[in-house]
Length: 384
Image (cartoon, rainbow, N blue to C red; front, side, top):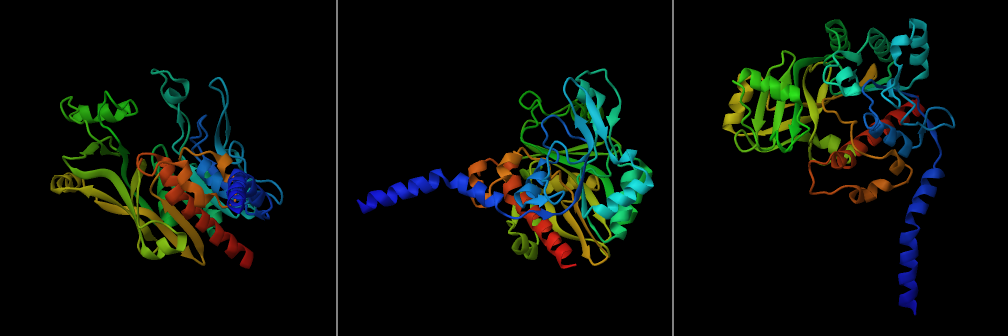
């Protein structure tokens, strides 16, 4: 009889666990921290900055004393609407006075995506050329200057200053934060077979064939590099890589501080950044698993095997992070953020053996990293 009661009690606890977790989240006090989120590439799937919104809501950070962040509303940039319509609500419409007020009100700024939206992608027409909206603007730079001068946190990530940002704005950003674009971006693809992988961008295939007598001899997984001059370099697993997936290797002190694994597979876009070591330090690096032939291909293209994944400047004058990967773009639902302690159950939301799934990256790397960064920063704001 006692054994039966124990079993029933355990079953009831399990059944009602989501309710207890939601109530635990709901009863956690809100913490006001005003975050300016810039996303110029938001598409109908709503994923481009959802990961950061997830972290803010899960930690009960609010934009006002009462209102939490809404993924489809609380950002600046491109707003998709129905029937190929859209609304632009970027910082480009802000005057210097408005940017000054925003920099006073805001506690931090996060540029999650500045690539933008192109007519061909938005209208689904092959002959639709040109860009609708995108690139880092002069107003963006001015806000960043003000945030830095006021010792506030700035986070930016992959392609912040890549195409289509102008040379002047790119140079201004580089001077402001002590980083520099090498001009190279890369991406892991689980298959380079054009018949099997329909997500291979046509411009990559055409660019490689143009310089290689129309050939595309790839079938396995691999990494594609493209530079600002449209040169394409490809490392295929087996021929040039012992393993195609890039790894993010994390400093030991950072592993302990943010509860991160020593290494994490990263299956998406990244850029190769350079930096001033007197200003910034890498706390995590990308490592490519090249063999001797792969090393030579990288050397010929002046590309490194190991390069920064996360650069940081964390001193009293200002706080700055640069994520060299498209870290914030992951297929996760913000709805799962409304449960306290859900991190301990993260294995329910992904398949641990599916390294190509970016959900793995979110739960194992991005969530603990950003939870730690925002919690530490809020603590410093409260202390000050």
